[in-house]
Image 1 (cartoon, rainbow, N blue to C red):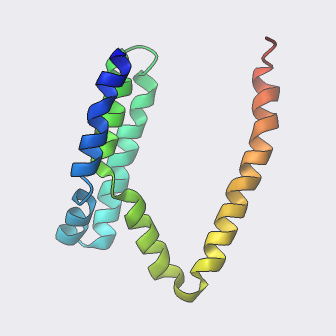
Image 2 (tube, rainbow, N blue to C red; image 1 turned 120 degrees about the horizontal axis):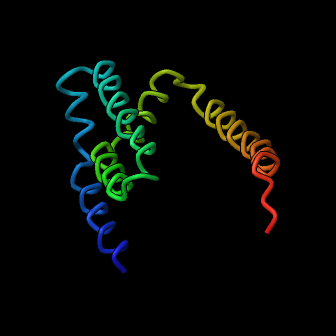
Length: 117
């Protein structure tokens, strides 16, 4: 129950900070805004290293990463602008590649960790 209570504010932070990425891109320009938000996401994503040692790191990572909740909309907009009429082909190949990576990763994961329950 304690985990649910601590994770519940993430929903509110995520919802309220949705326009933050758009405002950053408006203020800095799309390219610089993308780089700034990407660097922020990488910095916050790096907190996973602390998770085994400090219990607050898991919650801090998700609280801080939810500040960049408009990231998916930004990347989708940039992909649409870059690929234009070939966007559907791009999305099909992206999905196919993602599925292929999942199919190859599952047996490798099982091989590397060799869990015998």
